[in-house]
Amino acid sequence: MRNLGEFTIPFKGLKLGKHQFEYELDNKFFDHFEYDEFNSSDVKIDLLFEKKSTMMELTFHASGTVNINCDLTNEPYDQPIDSQLFLVIKFGDEYNNDDEDLLILPHGEFEVNIQQYIYELVVLSVPAKRIHPGVEDGTLKSEVLDKLEELSLKNQKKKKEDETDPRWDKLKNLLNE
Image (cartoon, rainbow, N blue to C red):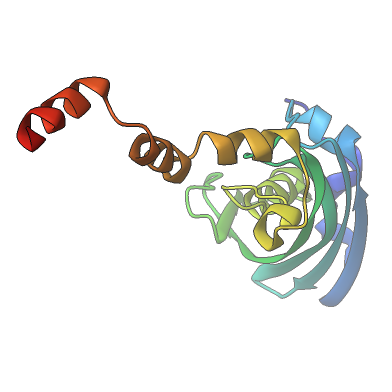
């Protein structure tokens, strides 16, 4: 996968100290990663890039919404996103990104691409089980919810209690005679 140029930071020319970067993400960004779980997205990334003499510290903050489908009803809804990531960049003999909080770049590198970190920050901030807020508070009216309620175990047990097997009725009659 090729790197998106706007997410490459040339740190060689930056002075020591703190620098602010802002990024606006939409579905084009996620299409680049071939990720199609979002119907639409409007996420803002605020990056605080602190350059020190021997290392760099990056603090990402993602905020906004992504429109996704509910796992129960398949109804689309806006899921709020609000998460942070802290990343330390140090220099070493070879490239190493095995640790999620530490990136080691080879000596002589002059830029870093952060698109993968931003992608993971946003995608991992969406809950594993996506439930429409209307399902949780009971305000969503949906055919799928009605069918789920009809087929629920509670209703099945209630129906079974109401209906008795005619063979048992015959046996009960024998006891009464």
